[in-house]
Amino acid sequence: MESITKNRQPPEVLRAMVGRAFGDDQVPAGEGWVEEFGHGWFNVVYAIRLRGGDRVALKIAPPAGVEVMTYEREMMRTEVRALELIRKRTTVPVPAVLFYDFGRELCDAEYFFMEYVDADNLGIVWNRLPADSRDQYVEALGEANRQLNQIAGDRFGSLLGGVPGATWRQVFTGMVEDVLADGERRGVDIGWDYDLVRDLVARHADCLDEVRTPAFVEWDLWESNVLIRDGAIVSIIDHERAFYGDPLIEAGFAAVELDGLGSAEAFLRGYGGASRTFTAAERMRRRLYNVHLILIMIIETVYRGHTDPTQYDQARTRFDGLMAGFGHRR
Image (tube, rainbow, N blue to C red):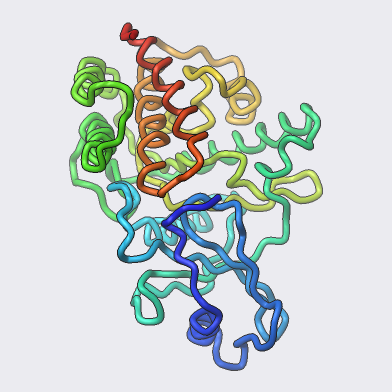
């Protein structure tokens, strides 16, 4: 996936990064030692073979001059922190961080090296899998997601330190406002009046007050962030959007109140609640979370410089459907 946020670097810079992380004796020479993973949406990621033969993965943050959405700031620091938490407090498989450089001396952005995982990306092979295999993977994903949500936070918001004492209502409505402000700043056409969306969220925000305990939320746990091998999940990747919040905002629950995403049954079965019935307040929270999600999917296409309109068009259609569910029709 092409995006102007991908901070590609020339071979001499990549070699310098390797030298800083692993020593000059591991700097690769010749050809064929680096390969870019092409399916990422935000950061550039490389597979690099060190001179000693080991493979590592390198992720580089966006260029300093590229404007990102408000919630995408400091995402590399967030991911490194998320990986640390997950490895310490769960058995969910994630890559180990091998070296993190936030100094911006070798290039204009932070970067980190992590363990290379030799496996297939579930999102890429998804359409080649039989339905029962897909369900098994999604069920396993639900089980993993439940573990992640059991990591307790001391406040709502950023893993790097949210506002002390802030309620989930304050944090989530602030997240929505950040996205709306991002869209207004760049003049993104969301198909609806921005203030109408603000009013809609404010009118229904009471349901957010039920959430009193901050939990680790992965938020971006889709099939394309899952690596599989020999019928099992062997790693979950891309943790930069994690925060402390309401587990119901997780991607696996989106289909509960969003058409076009299939069934949430397998995810719920793995999560431990296949027979769960959602309360009216929970369903309203999920609908608000879908508003937030689809707004991001619309607005990020402008920030990332997409030339293919597919994501924008599909997200606009879904957003119209969400607004209709709140009684707003064209």
